[in-house]
Length: 109
Image 1 (cartoon, rainbow, N blue to C red):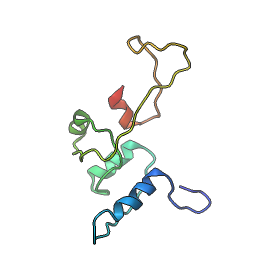
Image 2 (image 1 turned 135 degrees about the vertical axis):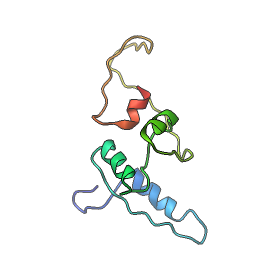
Image 3 (image 1 turned 60 degrees about the horizontal axis):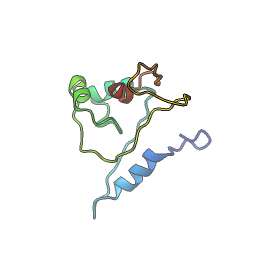
Image 4 (image 1 turned 120 degrees about the vertical axis):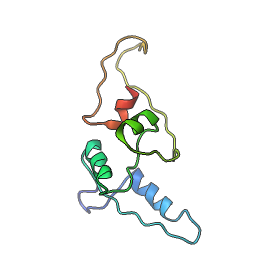
């Protein structure tokens, strides 16, 4: 969110703008709500405060254990780990940092 104007900015806003007019002759309406953590989003989903979370990892196990249903994949992107080491051994034991309550990344680790 742009602190000066209070307007939502970024890729999610761009995607919603594209999606709202994707059906010929019908305009979709979106009511965007912001949450500080993925856990808050999941709670809002479970109590019916929101209808969907955009976006989550396409992980069937994670969806099943958390009691939600996944849509078809809506876009793809490459994900990589970042390291300061000259050589990185993916098979070795490594210490990993993730943002607190980052539900999407927990499934990958």
